[in-house]
Length: 121
Image (cartoon, rainbow, N blue to C red; front, side, top):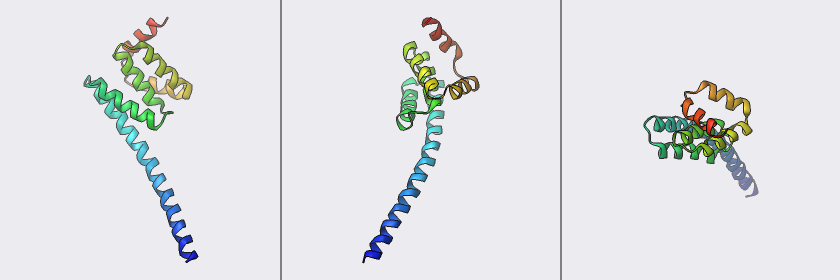
C-alpha cells in the first residue's frame, strides 16, 4: 500500500513539473500573441482593447519590457504623457538595454512619444 502511494506521489510530482513546463511555454506564446493583438488594436484605434492586452501581459509577467513600452506608446497616443513616461521608466528599470533595443527596433508612434518627452522638460 505504501509503495502504491509513493508511486502515485511521484506521478503527481512529474505531472506537475510537466504542466509547469507547458504553462511556461504557452505563457510565452500567449504573451507574444497578446502583444501582437494589442499592436493591432492600436492600429485600429481600439485603445481600450489594446490596453487590456498589455495589462494582461504585465499582470502575468511584470518584467515584460515589451509590454511596458507598447503600453507607453498607447498612453502617449491617448495623450496621457505621465503614464507614458512611467511605463518607459519601468521598462528601463527592468532592463535598460532591452528597453532601448526594443524602442529602436519597433514601429512606435515616435512623434507622440517625443511630444510627451517635450511636455516633461
